[in-house]
Image (cartoon, rainbow over all chains, first blue to last red; front, side, top):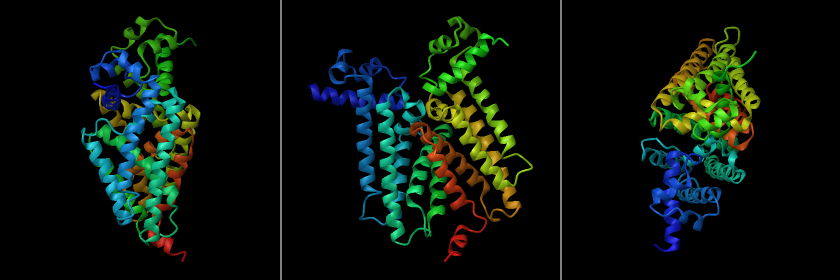
Length: 193
Length: 204
């Protein structure tokens, strides 16, 4: 395996392990073992577990950005369709593992990202990016006259990002997509004209 | 009064779990913080899961006290009771350390996939809160403070998930903003005495 392939392999496998077990609970040994590489491989590619954590967040976030580009920020689609598509893709992503593992950002947040200020700040920035994208979509919907008048798009977008995390948390506890469906239904009834 | 080893483990254990998460706080960390011998943990708790159930119960007994003086308080008008409930959650988050968030939510995020016992206890806790929210909303409908057709069960479930989400974001952002946004959205967009559309269009 080339050095760069090994690096990617550690990230792919490590992301899966962290998503299942939580970051704090995953040891470097867990990662190299799951990747079937010698212990020393980790130190060759990552300066610390924090460095590794930042890099798996980058991968996960690249995925989120792709979803957002196809949905919330996709000007070719009608605005509220983008929001529905975004929520549907999120649900499909969560249903892949029967709602067991939830969202990586939410998991990092719940574990207390305070062990690393770098990681905590990164999560805060990521949530801010998702909120901006949601607000962008809501503003397009407002311009198209699809929303209730004078809706505070930024406030609603921030609320929606937080509530989606809450819905994911309850979906995990209930092992059911019902909280995600309830969230979507209530969100639309709140904002639509 | 002198605390027993068991009480010390529960008190310090709760603090550590709030700080580091349920799995992040190891049994060794907990006994060290409590200043008790390692064996003392196993004397009092057959497993970490059993310890988890106990701290959830302690945490939830405080939640119940909050429910009693807010949502379930017979002397409060229903929507005032709801506001008081949300305010009490904010106050609790500030008092316990905003960066810690809500214990039930944290354990829910971490343990739902790994401990069926903890997951089921959390479901019971969430159900009780949803039940109190629902009864309060039904009183509001009855009092004419919400429209007659309001789906109180759906709305109660929605408020709980929105609250859990807001506490999670407050925790990572070290800020009360997510909980304030929840207030704005709930009270200006959802809980309007008339249908939301009527109340806003009336301003034109």
